[in-house]
Length: 394
Image 1: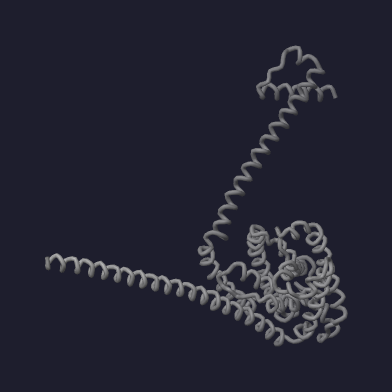
Image 2: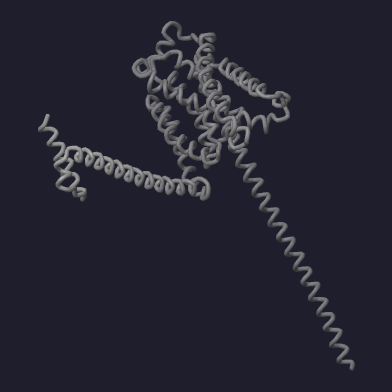
């Protein structure tokens, strides 16, 4: 023990000499002084570590600020550059989605995951910067997270598999029609919205209808378990029970973390949610929206739940029949494409019409100025001509 203590004292002494602090000879002989020296040494070491940590924090902040400025410039100021890049990216993805679905269906869930991991950080950043990040707590994002849980964590769960199938072919697919998702190829925001609502049903179409029984048994056992007793079986009551359970989890988390915890920011108008947007725009004149709080929110929650049950009522058809499920996905894709075409024609058509009217007004103004100038010149010419004639007569 004494040997260990002497070694500790020597290490502290050597550390002090290395640090440039030279103790006196008497301090080295006194054990109390040695303890004080040790405390001073460790205190100085902690202060140095804190200074290094503060320096690292400052450097990290500066790095994040630099990255943030670059991203702001790309996504908000010079948007045309990134739109030019995203346009071919979208077209290539459409090709790969069809190619993988037809040629390598066993890899489609991997491709879906990679795209989700690529697009979601962009969605989070752009929504956070525009104070729209409360939208990220909506059901569609929860369902995508639920799909990832099934694909990568819990592929044996029959109730999770069928719930994801019901959510994907139910709420998410019909949201393309309800929310008018538009397939605008150059827009990151609109394509991401289409991806969030259309890729989960495509993924579960492949998992259920596109894979062989051997691949399903190996990678997604819940599919085989759900078809074990009867290949034409879709228990509507069973699926209502489980989808309602997962829906209740989402609603509970949503109302606690968004409706209650963030109520001050929402009421002040600093943040927007789907509920506040609908009650202030699309349904602001509906009598339910004019009821005192919390009745509009309760009505909205119940209507949303009824919407979920209504949309999933057809999932038995998509679950049983491959051709009808594929036809339904094509219909959803056509709806998004039509909305995109309408956006291009209406938006750019109106924009061109405004520019044409502006040019027309400029031409008319120039013609009027030219006419006024000509009339002024003619008047001056007449006056000068009359003066010259009078001088000649004199």
